[in-house]
Image 1 (cartoon, rainbow, N blue to C red):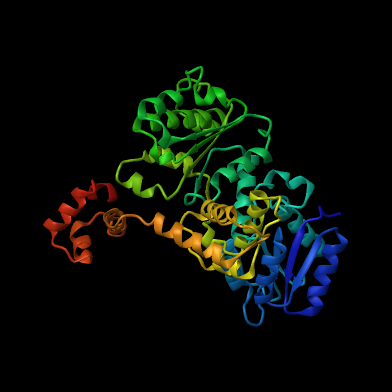
Image 2: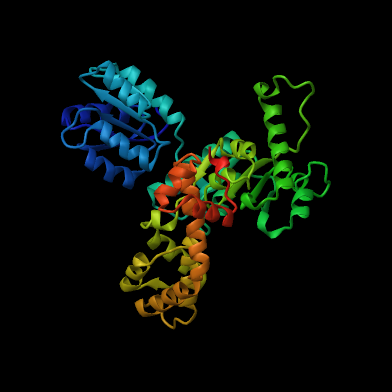
Amino acid sequence: MGQGGRILVVDDDPGMLHLIGLRLASAGYQVTTAESGEAALLGFREHLPQLVITDLYMRGMDGLALLDHLQAAAPSVPVIMLTAHGSIPDAISATQRGVFGFLTKPFDGQELLQRVGEAIRLSPLLNPEHVSAQWRKEVVSVSVRMEEALRQALRISLEGKAALLVGPGGSGKATLVRAIQRAGARSAGPLVHLLAADYPPSVQEAMLSPHDAEGVWQRAAGGLVYLAEVGALSPAAQARLFAVLLAQMQASDPLYRLGQASQPEAVPDVQIIASTPRSLEAAVADGRFRRDLYYLLSKVSLQVPSLSERPEDIAVLGQHFLAAIRPELGLRLAPGALQALQAARWPDNVRQLRLVLEQAAATSLTPVLTETAVRRVIRQYAAESLAGFDDARRDFERDYLIRLLQTTAGNVTHAARIARRNRTEFYKLLARHGLDPVDFK
């Protein structure tokens, strides 16, 4: 019998679709079917399957095009490809694009079930209503993008390795870290949250020392350390963190001990999760963040989507927050209020959405939160959150120069030509922002 996994089957041949669905259902799987690639995308968003089985050659969107869409939205969901016209080029193309398996019709039923079983074991059930999914109870979402982040979070928890979360401020990184801890063997251990920017360099270094009896590693023994805004660590603190991560890898993987004359330094039993609001590649390129530390952290990396990348979550998040803000009123959003929220920009993401609702609800005298109340707070928040013109221009200029140097591999002549500046002026711009072209070569 199957494990009760949730499978989406796609084929424009109704007979084949029925046959595959019947075989999988009889093996204990929950099966949803779609007769086209376009219908499959809708079904995927609605049912959030653990596995997709699709025909390669279909009218309209074919299997490879469907695979591309699924890879963009949920790359950790396995896809098995079926075709009646199997060929080596087709198999190579599908494999290179990340397909999990490739079966040729007519396929053997037992082979199909074997491949399905292998895929399902690698693709755990994430249904928030399932009793085994309590680990994700704080994550309120109906978004495919967030569901993909949760799938990756679960793997990070089960593997117990260090990881780097990348996502803008207010997007829910801390919530994901709590879910990671609850999902794995460290759920009963402590969770120590360290916001790097809150501490001066000397304190950062001391806290990350493996020999400090009151340091982070000792307080988190048997649990998890969450290093938020890891890019704000001082060079000395980065060195401490690198030493701990390297020692952990040397202790767990014999390959890292090759050439080492002695046993790796003992370190506390902790899982390390770091986060950053933006990619650290620019900080690595200009020397503000250690390249070797970035390599160790980013071996397992998870992108946390912004609220603008998951707009379908605004309604469910809004109602979730209102239920907690003033439960005595039973607050709900008026249709116009919801439309205002969905049309707004959210630079501070989920955190900003909650603040807007808290302010709008504070003055509400009725259970219905009106469009007028919501729009007033949105305008106020937008005005207060705008950066000064000089600050915004400086940030844009530095980001532009970094991207330009990355694109040209540090070739100043080429970069200056693209920027339409002479070399002398371009060098002055680089010096103003502390950028060295050599770091980009």
